[in-house]
Image (cartoon, rainbow, N blue to C red; front, top):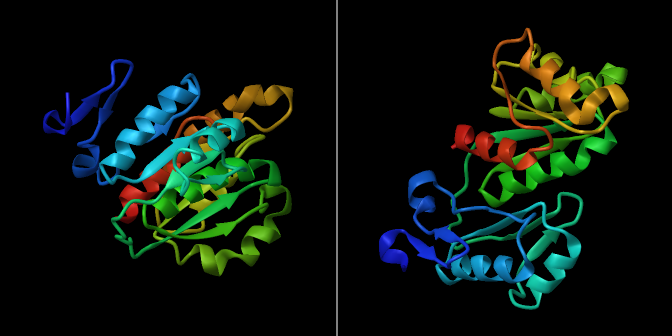
Length: 222
């Protein structure tokens, strides 16, 4: 089936070409579990239809392969994101702040920030300002308070999201990461802390889901 049905049937995938008109952004490709050839064909359909391209959790080898076919494809190695901006240059006016608790949380924060940027948002990054040294966060408070929405990325016990939410008036999107020692349980401890936040106005996405946080923040900012 072609674009008249709103999707393209490749047999192994039905590429949703109508998603941009429904949601404001094209279908995003989750890369793990797909072969290089499958990634190539799905990406090709989106590019052919002049839509922005975003491939999440994309490894370096797959990116190198795809770039030979899509020369303008770009890559954020830290975030493991492949991306190609579409022709739509719409910009959301509000500022989105992306905050990481630790340096080890930066890859997930970068996934959120890059997603936001390709979706047309103005982004400010504030990294390594976790609760073990709260003065680092306070030093950036003036900037943080200018944001229309804030993404907080934290592993370990995940307390930073509640702290930030208690200091600002805008929505906070919390992203638990899998960084931490044994009792972190691969991000579960941070997830539970964020879900149990006593500060109202905190929404929580899945563990290591920087893309989901960036997408949600963009919807709020729009």
